[in-house]
Image (cartoon, rainbow, N blue to C red; front, top):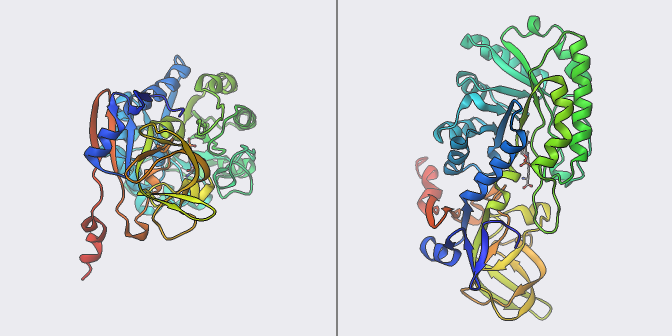
Length: 417
Ligand code: LLP
């Protein structure tokens, strides 16, 4: 297990000073258990790497949007990268500063734009001309000037999973450099209620090397120079998110290594640096704790059937993503098995043909690196209640989301009668 803040003491797994078994006994399973210290440390790593240079670190809320987790970021002074009106509302509820929010996404609704303009967010990451027109009209009606950063697609391959690469020209995201250039010509005349504030790029997720970032930043920096020659000055240079973490044996670049590679071309332009990391901040802050319900021996295979399922953590089913699985209490011996959930789909697996400690009914397992795109992508499929979330700091644990109940699930259906 390669998550800092999760370690074994006397054969038992601990999250900071809290026994994972004790947390499971208190709050039940499946349970997302988060380390607050890990999150704080990760945020600080970026702050350190950017020290002395004008910057805004905007945590990508979509990775893990629990209000208590957002509060940790808000208290550290973080900004936020949001993709919906409700993400903005979560940030505000958590005490975050809406004026430090950058808002991405190809399909912002009029209602969402209104909310963001009213709250004076830092800027909209704009992805199309119709969107620009809509924001301009709404800002005009509200008597405000809204800042926008144009999201340019640098057409760079981030060497990551096809579903999470975003910076290639065939992806739905962003505008080409020439479209962006066209938009910025005569901008104040065409869009009197908008201020062109920045350029944004985002090339994908779980990127472990610095090279794709550097290529994209160099391309974008050249483009900024061209815009300057045409009289357009932009303040913010937003590199998006995407820095990878260790799931198995990856050796991702550190923030210090990344910033060292990409800051020089940005500082040469004198622009404020913005990044929108999600996974890096929270991915390894959490494990999904689950209980073994049955061990089923088929002629060809052994299945360890656990009480968490694809509805709790969909990444293995959706991306064939690797998540390490370790026993909460060490066991003697191992066996080869599939770790699967109770959902009625063959895709409901966490690991296949893996060598696992010889666990049995009632034993606890920790599914590792579950902090990013874990709970936020969970659902009620098979009418399963979503898991509880607990935040640990030192030897204190706080329930930050109650386990759902049947009543929670059907509340809105019952009101339709
Ligand atoms: N900024 C923008 C505009 C984004 O679209 C994303 C993620 C981020 C920042 C944060 O990226 P991160 O630092 O977390 O890589 N569900 C997938 C990941 C989808 C990422 C979507 N966009 C997964 O489970 O791997």
